[in-house]
Length: 305
Image (cartoon, rainbow, N blue to C red; front, side):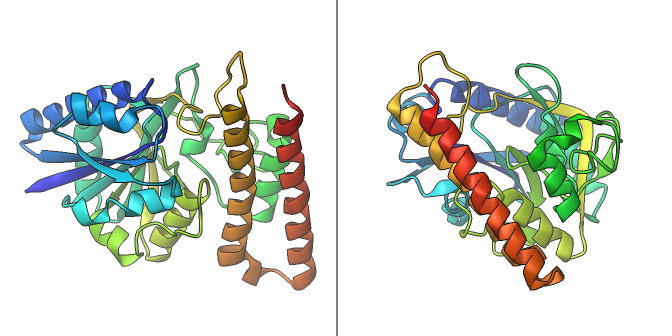
């Protein structure tokens, strides 16, 4: 019987995805040796053009590969693996991550011992050093969103009022309940994923992880940050937003797509979960502000050489 299904996203990750596969397979072996629990690894490739799919088939034949003919985005990509998932738990994982020891073992022990938890993440560190702040996120209310978008949270990073979104007032070494976790590492129970219909396909990229957590929370389950174990996130590699010396046309187009998608996801989330809590004038102001933000973010990448 499969205990854990690991679902990995891949889009032009050929240069980094070996770290994800090798460390996932090592964690798979740890889980089998220490707890006698079996794992399956499933990868969806969103029409990579760098030979990722061919590399996976040749180098990792034990991994189930779902090849999508076009880039259908993160939500649809995850959903494309649904017919092949057999585990009690599902770990949704970015293809630009690397595991440290005991991640599978500790995380499954944690969820097995806490039935009220619907989603959990471990500590996620950036490859450049420090915590990936998006691995533990606060409520998407107007105050937190304003502080995050404007960057005012950076003035008082440990103040709850200014930095409630990134939980700056709580040590990153402390286990605690959160509003949302990052899609780079999102562990959940398959029965709950089935109840909410898996990932909302209105989102193309970004925001879908917060939407997923919101729906699990609405079922009455907790979303938890558990820093007893950690992974490394090579952030930007899966989205094409990492810093490079030469910006090609493909990289620029990818960054513009990510910029548009990030703001569009805010609109979608706001419409689905927050707009009904506010009056029409507030909603008009929010949508106008997001339109301005989208324009500024796109211009940033269009004029950047």
